[in-house]
Length: 300
Image 1 (cartoon, rainbow, N blue to C red):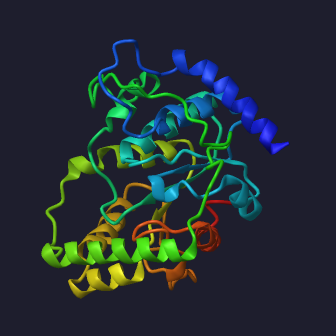
Image 2 (tube, one colour):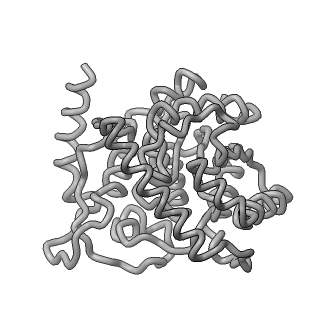
């Protein structure tokens, strides 16, 4: 039954892609996100009912399965996370979903790194006319060959996940962790001067959610324990700055922060990473249980 539903959705989306954000005949560049943003926006258009939970973030959040979260919260959901997801992506996905179902309340899960946000607009987002109406001209009007992908289910979850063998994964993780540590040592983290402009879309998104009567849950993404240990040798100033920023922001906006950077907090395993920055489905499920139980009721 699930296979039939997936095939039906893919056929419908393929038919819709030409008029819903695919590039014109004068394409000037390939799509750098493999169609993630075009696909997620199109899937939202084809949802039969309003999702009770919206997940936004980067590729690190794409394995957060709405079906599993429904077993924890009782809410249906949609995963709107995309490759290289930014605050601008969260803003567009949030607004697009809200405009699709006006005056409907929902829960929100925002997965972010310690840097929290950037002020840029990814070209694949700006290239989609459905997104541009929320961007006020930011990002321009790039022409990209972005097409709807069949890699996602109707709820935005990954349709086919093919894990590597444990030996392959161990080699990938070891190599990427070593590279991350080498980069930290070559460029030791220093306290950063806060650029308020980079938080514009992030704060706009939280404020909009609050106006809808919703209290979002912001999750700090997990970090491989060896990389985290290296960052902590230098005081991990970015994490300190993130928590200080959140405390200031709570004076104006309402949200819950769940810090999942240290996997020991939520019972994660260093063996269940797919590389230095991404955890696998086993760790994702462990983390989601922790997030829901520490969401102060915001997720149901």
